[in-house]
Amino acid sequence: MSASTRLAAILQAVMQGMPAALSDRHYPGWHLAPVTGLLNDPNGFIHFDGHYHLFYQWNPLGCAHQHKCWGHWRSADLLHWQHQPIALMPDEEYDRSGCYSGSAVEENGVLTLIYTGNVKFEDGSRTAWQCLAQQNSAGEFDKLGPVIAVPEGYTGHVRDPKVWRHENHWYMVLAAQTTQRQGRVLLLRSDDLRAWHSLGEIAGSERGGLGAAGYMWECPDMFTLGDSTYLICCPQGVAPEEKRYLNSHACAWLSGSLDYEQAEYTHGPLNEMDAGFEFYAPQTTLTADGRRLLVGWMGTPDGEEMAQPTVAHRWIHQMTCLRELSSRNGRLCQQPVAELQALREAEQHYQGRADDMPPIAAARLELMLESQGDIELNFADTLILSWQQDELRLARRSLVTGEWIFRYWTGAARRLQILCDHSSVEIFINEGEGVMSSRYFPDTPAKLTLRGGAELTARYWSLRRCMVE
Ligand code: FRU
Image (cartoon, rainbow, N blue to C red; front, side, top):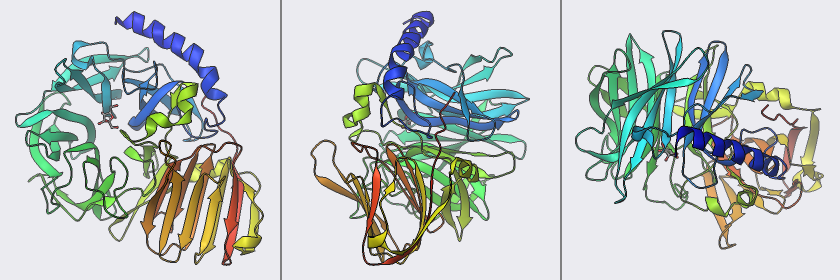
């Protein structure tokens, strides 16, 4: 497809698809979602020249994982976002099967994207190029072409570059699969973003004491917070345990320290990032005032995604809310970013037994709860959280078989902060020690009903709509 044919098709898809998406009752009121088609990973999250930029994997032409472009939103305040022109389309030989995930940096005052050009062949094999694009004075992104080919010893599954600056060098973590089908993360260094030198593998399956931990580690991100250097990654093929790693693919973090000179990352065990049904491929950036923020895709690949009812309205998936990260005793914690408090309407209170609390409208809601547990939170009979003394259990019916399926967070939850939108619930546990993020598709505007004899204290707010403009 030529670039102009593709652009015409995208324009038509948006014109036809946007009314269907925006009038769907499941379309979010304050989360970021595609105006039509499929959204997956957040990309290129950066504060640049007074604005936050968030790019995203976007198939504007339908709900399948195809035709991946980089959509682009911009915000001055992390709350109100504006659509920007589509940033990248797969129109070169080296990115013809998709402009896959990547990151953004500022190079000499210029917004620069580093992304994966994915190339699939008819025999099912693939190759990948790590590519650059730079914003020009008209605001468009000029592709500068590939700067890294598939390194020796790895398959065509090499992608998702995340680049940062450290002591006068550029560093990149890059997802890779060895020819022995082991998932790994590579560390590379460059002085100019163009010539890259691989420093070697820093983590992965059968590395650093992890044992077998998957055949591909997608979307790595690395940063230092407090005393720890964290590596976030999405290991595919981690064996499900009774109460962990139950999604089709996992997202996890490691905590440790990175020796940049030896390219050695010493780290502890893998920890699941989010214990809900939908969370994948998050990306972080620093705010102007030095906070480390994260946004994730509230979806998981290869699961039941195509059974979601929004597909009939020609859109699928949304982002999580923006979250601020903190490091507490070597543990990575996530809390909703403070800016979201501007969405709150009048504060309401309740104190007493869960059974006596009147049902509350949950379509757009923030709820802070304190209790010792033994409470059930029923979201429109569609998503049910059992808050037990030493565990949270989230239940939802399979969209395919109708059977109840469960996710767990193990530990004593004492405080919950719950953020609801029209078709999503994000549960932050004990000031962000744990999170459970899930989509759900209630038939009517959702009501939340609490059950149980336990005492609780609740503060809650309806949330205003905040649509992208
Ligand atoms: C993760 C992922 C990335 C890839 C992108 C393609 O969801 O598979 O590894 O770059 O999505 O859309």
